[in-house]
Every structure is written in C-alpha cells, then in structure tokens.
Length: 422
Image (cartoon, rainbow, N blue to C red; front, side, top):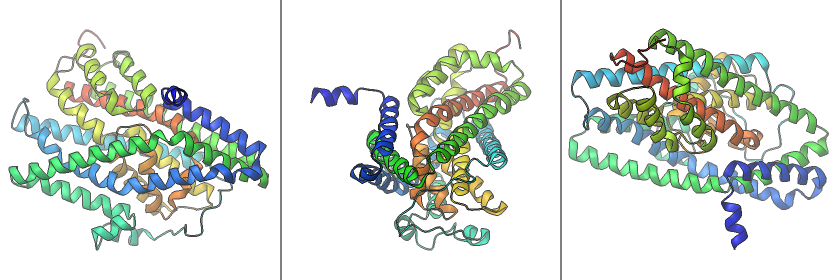
C-alpha cells in the first residue's frame, strides 16, 4: 500500500511521461499482445465522454449566471463604472480569444501537420459525418435539450446553457440566486469528477499509446506517425508563443502604453506556477497577488477581471483546440471547407468558455469541436499522448492573457501602473 501512495505522490506530468514511455515500449516490443492493456485506454476515453455534456452544461450556465455576482458590486464601485469595467473585460476576452484562434488556424493550414498520417481504426459505431454549414447552424438550437444531452449534441447544449445562464441573470433575486447556487454546486461536482478521471490519465495513456504504437508498428507507419505528431506539437507551441509574445505584447504596448517585458517580469512567478500545475484556477491567487503587488493594479480591477478570466478567458486553450481539431481532420483525410473551419472557430471560442481551469480539461472540451464537424470523439486518442505537455504551455498563455487584460483595463480606467517608465 505504501508503494501505491508513493506512486500517487509523484506529480501527474511525470506519471504521464512514464506511461508514455512504457506504453511505447510495450507496443513496440510486444505488438501482438497490446490487447492486454488497450482496454485501459478505452475505459479512459469512455470516462471522458461521460463527463463532457454535464461538465459543459454546468460550466457555461454557472459562468454566465455568475456574472450577476460580479456585476452586483460585492464591495466594488457601483453603477456605470462597474458596467463599463465589465464591458471592457468581456470585449478584451472575446478579442484575444479570436486573435489566438486565428493564429492557430493560419499556422495549421500552412504547415498541414496531419497530412499523410494514417489514423488509427475506430469502432464500428464511430462514423464520420460532415454536415453542410447551413445544417450545422440550424441545429445549434436543439429541438429537445434532453435529447441533445443524450446524443452529445454539443452545439445544442452550449446554446441552451448560454440561454439559461442569461435568463438567470434577469430573474428576480431570490429564485435566480437559488438556481445559480445550484449550478455552481453542480459545476463543482463536475470539476471534482473530472479531476478524479484525470488522475487515471496515466493508465489510460499507457493503454492508448501501446495500442497506437503496436498498430502503427504492424502497419509499418510508426515513424511517419511520430513525425506527424511531432509537427503538430511544434505548430501548437509556435502558435502559442506567437500569440503570447507578439499579439499580447502588441496589445500591451498599444493599449497599455508600457513595456511588455516589464509586465512579463512582474508576472513571472504566476506564469511558472501555471506552467508547472497546468491549472489557471490553482494559479489565480498568485496571479492576483502579482498583479496587485508587482504591477500595482488595484484590487477593484483584479478582483473582477482575473476571476472572470479564469472562467471564460482561455486563449491558449481555444488556440490548441482549433489546431488539434484541424490536425485530426487532416490525419483522417478530411478536407474541411472554409465554412466548416468557421464552425471550428466559433465552437472553439464557445468551448473555451466551458473549459474548467484544471489540468487536461481542454482535452475534455475538444470533443465538442470534433462532434461539431462530424468527427468521432474517439479520434481524440490521436493527440492524447502529448496533451499533458501542451497543457502546460497553453495554461501559461491563459494566465498571461488574463494578466495582460487586467493591466490594459486598469490603464484604461486611469490607474497609475508602471508610471516610472515604459
């Protein structure tokens, strides 16, 4: 029992790295015996699919309806000042997420990392169905929300969740608060369940890697697959670095009016923690501390902008989901039209809002985008082996974008941050 406890005390990223290596060795050395452990990967993917619909429903409803608490004051300034602050925050988050997705979309189309890769076989009940853009837009509004939940109709679930959250904002105080409290509790439940499932990620990845490596080894495509996945990782990392150090730097310089490197230095400890924990929620207290004590941003701004950002602003996650979806489509030989890629952009933007600020949550929400363009959820197995590594990078970008938003909005509100020089 003590050995099990010691293993569980090892950081998750080291557990996943070990599973990646062991699974690869097992699939390479014993390709005909991979079936003995591939069941672990199948169970892990089924658990991920199980949690997606309720997680997204509760996350988006609680996130949208939770704006009521932020906008109600809670010790902050009231009236038009707070409304102006909220509008600036939401506009900033929408703009940076769209910019991040655009960077990823352009790069993945230029490099085409999945072209020529032969995808693994899927179960017989997994089918690829690419719907026309008009049909996809029409089906955003579900005929029956319970049917949408049962069939994992993610766009319908997202629409209903946004609508329900918006209505709760307008409900009378007592009833609205009870409903908001219920969905916040339900979201906490879903986050804890997701955390439990993610704890079994090493076992799942062990089975998935063993199955994929054995299949590719027997088919003679192993080196080509490794090359394609490596190219995919490079595209994601380069796109994240471009967004962080070009796009957001430019916004800081233009709208903040100060040296971006100075803000980067102020946020260094929070960014390192975000990178190591892969959790924007766990990093939130340190992010607020750095913004207030190192950057000089007021508590009025940080206490509104940063908690909201940890919920709805996921630049890195949105970029990653866009690149991952197009990479999987390329690997499966699907040529997505411009309209279908616009659906990917829209869904990545909406899905990033529902991405819980916990490790590997983006892997859960990516199944939303896959279903929107008719790709079976099992296809996420193509990228699952390297997700934990990319999760560290995208979480750091998420936190960096939140802090940049706080700094830009604080400067727009006339706060004297970084006034000693540019």
